Length: 343
Length: 101
Length: 162
Image (cartoon, rainbow over the protein chains, first blue to last red):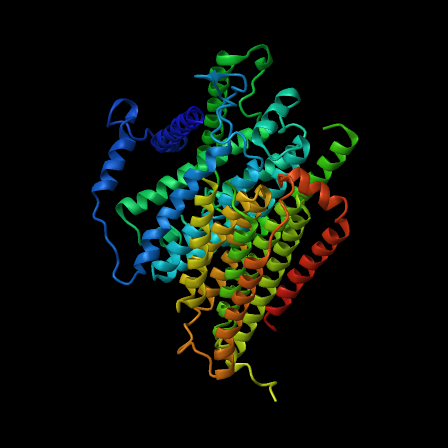
């Protein structure tokens, strides 16, 4: 029992450290990528190619003065960034980051590079925690005692709960084709057939758009852009609490990219993975997964600096009147396909 | 050493009593609805505990339906509260006495 | 181990339910109810109902309480002054009835001897799904009609007459 606990703790540490190091890398990619798309150079003074820039930014945020406005509700004001961070960190334990079903470490079977391999409810856990991310925003907006904060928080959370629906219905299509809620089953079924992006292309589009809306990224970031509503729900936060919101946004982006890769782009499978087994398969599958997640994250950055922002009513109309019917049609198509045996 | 069924039922009874006290003693409409939610959760705990006792899943299916009904009830109850607030500018349920004898 | 987790979750659930019904500030009430729902989800997981634990967080903590919080914030729900009831019958009854419930439950639970529990069945999504589209199909369809009725009703109730 202690060996199993040690193996789970090691997997947790590995994946958590990987997630936390992804944040400075993402900050660097965002700033250099934005610069190249806008035909300029980006940060290149601090360290080679500007690679030390995120570290310098973190140090700057750490040393900024931590201003707590006088009229805030103190308890909720301190609780909100903690809720945002908790939700962003706790969701990745059901995502399989690599193969390894037949690898044993010190006599304990690894059961795949997934922190919680035996959780029967898999995706439901992730969706349940994702729906809790609303609380971080709503509490931040309410406790700041500032009408722009409150408006930004209410708009942001309405956007989040509206786009949860098409996201969940698109995920339902994938689960129907795979026959299980567990993500390792979804990935291994994609290894045997085509990746889900091909038969469920409409669902893939719906999920991607909903993922952009769920993480408050452009073109759906009206509620928290710097030029709109005075940056929305985190305007009254400074120094480390603002850094907490900032980091939780990037962690959400990484988790949603990992989920997109797992559900539609084949997870850790790659052409020819059936010929390998054991440790080589584990290592190559982790590399494949990281490459795919990196490509999806680059797409997030690319879209951010290429498209204009949606107005709020256009955003809500898109979510309810366009994406939800498309997701429902995708579900009907998948049901017919599964019944006929095509999928 | 598993937890006996009576302890789960004791938890359900205590939660139900707390919820009932909330419904009966509060004047704020939202607090009354919160008390109703606590009572529904207490019933859910009792149902799942009995499902474990009998070894089949009928109790859990009933909990599924209770959750759906609770969601519907909260939506309509809060819509009613918002409509009442627009008319009376207050959610004090003791003010709603136009139809009393 | 299971006992420690259960007793911790049970005590925390009762305490936060008490705070949820007793505190004056509606936002504190809603937040402590979130804690209660988490503890109930832990209880479900201990009883082998893993799907219901996930659904509890998704539906209750993630949707119903968000709705409560929205209404509290949009109405700027004032704390109703002197929150004791004006009618003494209701005040007395409100204390006596829950106590009577507790006394009755205690009397039954202390006196009963239970048959040994049947073999536990895991509440996996597969098992629940088979029951829902099999024996309980009629109730399932009725619940979907009920949800549609609630949706339409809620929208009509808050529609402004323009």
